[in-house]
Image (cartoon, rainbow, N blue to C red; front, top):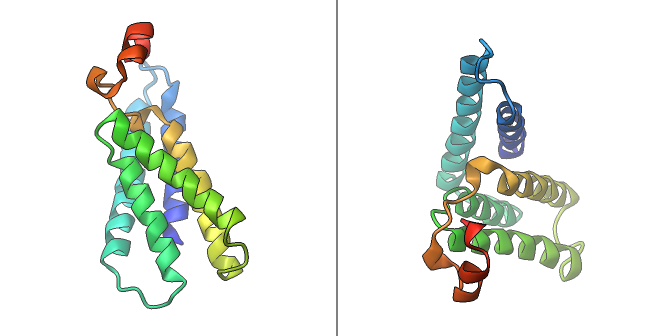
Length: 147
């Protein structure tokens, strides 16, 4: 799946710029590389969403694509946490409730995509802006630095 390769490149590019020195002359090239990588991920997501489902094995891949889009387009902390929980639930269900129900190559692609999306969820770039309205009263009172 091209999405897995594009996600790997984008994650590496994002990690490369996380701790860079802003005075490094190569910073603009690294930023452009990261932007191109994420643009490729979004373009592949769009193409896959528009493609027809030709095989039954495409359905789980498209479901994982929906999880990727939900995770990467979350606007609030709540939406992000819901998308991340759904990602974990899909992986848990596949491993525990439905082993051997899909071809090995599809399962391997889903596993790889899950690993990449878990890494995306940890990147600062995709951490949503914390909204105090999203936090429970107890958490916002006990941990005001949460945002």
